[in-house]
Image: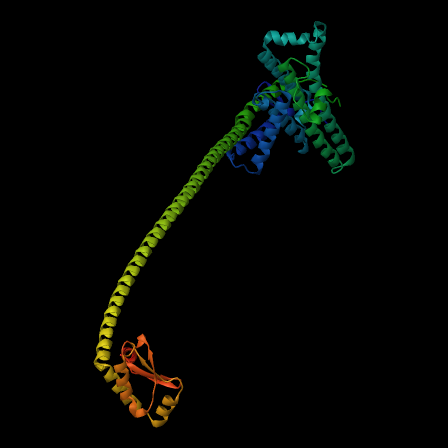
Length: 241
Length: 242
């Protein structure tokens, strides 16, 4: 059994060694691109079922963003939406036999966490200015500067590790059960893995939104509007499982 | 556990590319179609609001026109009623005037007819009186002796029973229009001597002229007054028959 802790080499493109997580990611990208192209060609003012579902997702996403960061949700829609969809599709790619989800490898989660970190920096400086963004580290007093600096790193690190740990553990468990019990036994675990993958995608996107929102507002609790219980729980007490 | 920096870099690039792809092919078109639908909905709402405002304005205009129509109708009815009332009063006045004129004409005609009838009656009465007088006078004797002779003739014309009843009655009187002179009385008794009677003389101016014999059992009429009555009765019967 190949360990998921190591990205397996697939092939080489010139000097670049392409691993299977990259290949899987390309597949996810190709699928999402194809679906997007098909959907874009069928968009109409009177929506069909698929378009209605997509519009419902986008509208719900906008509502979530607006509840966390007041203002135009269109600024963050693409980033948060892409993270949500990509993580979800990547997590569910494990349902295809022989495919390991890219998010079960630390490199992918690290890339996602880095994007969230950079987005937080960008939006924080853009909204508050460089001075305002730097001053936000001295909140509520200058004594907190070291802790706030460390928090900036650790919360993105925890974002990366949380996704990696949950998805990787699911892959591990299914691989072990599959090797021990047989073909059909892991199916309940795969269903659970689907649920876990969806929850993790939602948590990742929500935490990314909260982190960016805190960077935009300069406070740890950017959420001012009423939020759903699940979101409030995610904002106030991120899961550490 | 290892960390492959090449995979990390490739995944970073992949996610960024996916960001661009989904932005261009998914989120932007979907957001655009949502915005377009929202815009269409807003425009429809605006049109509906405009139509609603127009409908309300039209309703207000219609209500105002209806009120104006009702007011005009009320005024027209009032005016028509007043005109009808005036016309009715005028017609009544005219009818009364015409009726009064008709009554006056009728009364005038009736008065004229009455006058004419009265004149006709007077003329007829005059003629009748003339006829009566002429006939009566023509039948009268010239003097008392003539009346005495006519009285004697009348007694002679009666049946013996009638004459005996008359002459045998109590209170036999010889009535004249004026008191008889002794000579006249003698002449009268001479004319009646055939009947052997001795009546008491009596005067009755109503006789006008003549000599009558009266008793409790009856009378023999022989006077101008009696002749006038008989002629008038006969003429009246002739007039009725005519």
